[in-house]
Length: 65
Image (cartoon, rainbow, N blue to C red; front, side, top):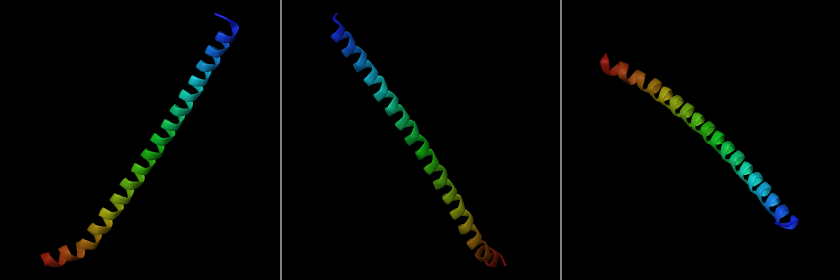
């Protein structure tokens, strides 16, 4: 193998690993973002349930009286 061939292999592998690392970083950032969105959605859902149950309590109380 000549020097040119060696250099080409070296740069190709380095480029591949750089691309792979970039993709891995993007994947982790996307995963973190999706997990954050899921947490916010869960909080919103819990808040809505609390508000709904709070609004229904007076009606339930009146039905029992």
